[in-house]
Length: 268
Image 1 (cartoon, rainbow, N blue to C red):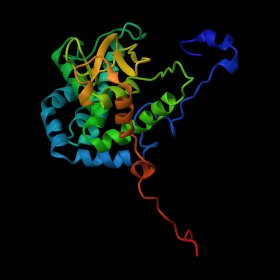
Image 2 (image 1 turned 90 degrees about the vertical axis):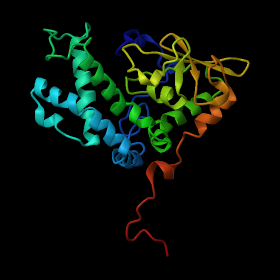
Image 3 (image 1 turned 135 degrees about the horizontal axis):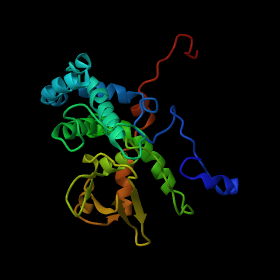
Image 4 (image 1 turned 60 degrees about the horizontal axis):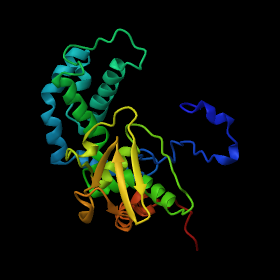
């Protein structure tokens, strides 16, 4: 059972395990769950913001095409191609040099060492096109993060539930909550979602008896900057937090659009 092999020795009735289903899973943004997400992303790809971002990385992409031996793949100005270019390359590079990955030798192409400026640019662009692109508009944020937020709110509505654990990946669920709430580390002022979630990333939401909530992201207290009354504070009123999260949850029409009616489906 993955990281918890001893779990097989537990009484099954004490465990409620939800197995991920790619067609229904909300842990990461999914156009299968919310079909209109693709339409919203395609609209963003046509914006000046997206095209300007692509233009800013043109020099790096030319060099990356040469050193990776894939000049044709990197010679594109289509914003929709950027996630495959940067996120895939970052994942490959970081996994290859990771001490826990059995990959030898640890050499990488010229200029792509993990402490070099080019690697940093790959990480920045990969983070944007893989994760932060979902926070570029209220519509995209709702379609990308809303389904998970709905599950979290449903979880919170069960009074007898004392602990819930979500296990995910670097694309969710931590980023979905961090970006939605604009969580910001109080000790540095840095926005949590602007840093690629490292291995063993942990986000904790603590709920207190005095109706306050606190977020701890990778061991550091983070303020909820998305809610005015919570900005710059370690604690946030739980009711205000809940009400704000409700606004991010899409309804069925927002998520799936107008259903197509086929011939013969009309009732007399």
